[in-house]
Every structure is written in C-alpha cells, then in structure tokens.
Length: 227
Ligand SMILES: *Cc1c(COP(=O)(O)O)cnc(C)c1O
Image (cartoon, rainbow, N blue to C red; front, side, top):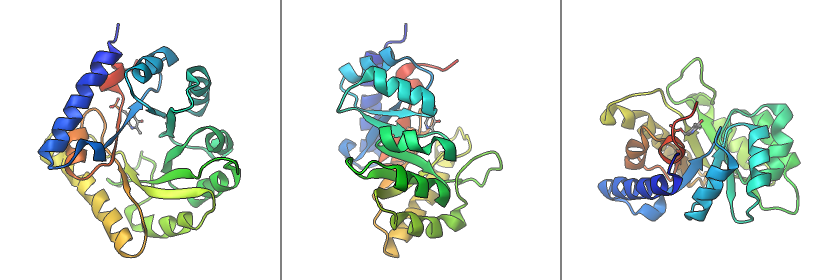
C-alpha cells in the first residue's frame, strides 16, 4: 500500500525546506500532484489530505479521473504531449495546459475553450536541453510563439515549462532551470507578462525551486513509483 497522505505531508515539508533554502516563501510554490497511471482513489486520498492541483499526461485517462474524482474545486493540469485531435476535450475539462509547443495547438485550444468558463491557463513547453527525443519549442523560437499565443482569446499565457535531461548533481540540475528562468525574464522585459515557471519533479524539485520554480510537478514522491 502506498501511503499517499503520509507522502503528501512529507513532500510538503520537503518543498517548504527547499523554499527556505532558496530564501523563498513556500506559498510562492504550487504543487501539482502528478497522478498519471494512478487510480482515482489515490487522487481522492490526496484531495482529502488537502491537495487540489492534479496533473495528468494522457487525455482519456485524465478525463476518466476528472469525472470519477468529481470535485468542483480540484484544478486539473494537462502536462502530457497534446495531439491536435485531442485538444477539444482538454479545452473543455482542464484548467491548465503546460505543454503548448506549437501555434496550431494553441489556436485550437483558443477556439475550443468554452465561453462560459475562465480563460485556459497556458505554459509554453521549451525543449531546454535541445534533445531530439523531447517535445517543446526550441529556446530561440519561444519569443515568437509566446507573442502569438498571448494574442489568442480565451487563453491566458502564464509562463514556461520544461522537462530537462536527467542529471544527478544538484548544481548540474540547476543549469537548465536557470536558463528557463532567464528566458522568461527576458520575455517579460520585452513586454510579456508571465508569472509561471513550471519546472521540477520528484528528482529535481529542489534545484528547480532554487531557480525560481512557481509550479513543481511531483508524482512518484506522492503516489509511489509507476509500473
Ligand atoms: C510524470 C511527470 C512528472 C512527475 O514525475 P515524477 O518523477 O514522478 O515526480 C512531472 N512532469 C511531467 C511532464 C511528467 O510527465
């Protein structure tokens, strides 16, 4: 049995400690509990412990869990690779999409976001280590994409997201996160108004927090290892 409640308390303490080590306040950092491949019961246990933000990678699995969990104040974050033919369900049922990496996807989300709901929160995924096997826009192309996304109705461009290459050393882990932060700062200096850095997972949240993460996406440390 995975002790979700206990794990959740533990990660809250660890995040608070990482924030303190970075000279930051813990309430500047939002924890998204990544529940992919885990059952709705595990999400409900985290919800009962006080967690409200949940991350899902797969559209169909996410929709099923949103329906089963069925809590009006839960906030659902889509954090997986998004195909064009799946945007409509995401626009209807999620509050955040962290993985926009091309304009076509943003345009579809904009058109498909229901008029009677709040704007959909958007992060642009950046392929921060320029890896062949990763999605995300190249760092050099972020400015153009961000400017275009910011113009789209019913979307609210919040910031940048990344999933760096795996590194074990804390100082090494900081580098890609520092680059993402610098990218957002330079875009904000040229007039954008982004407030979100979605970066850091179970293995590297402390380094991400040190570099200014405002959202960390943590799965394993809460729900246990995935199959
Ligand atoms: C799975 C996943 C996470 C969580 O990873 P853990 O190592 O289990 O904390 C975070 N972000 C994305 C995009 C993921 O796919």
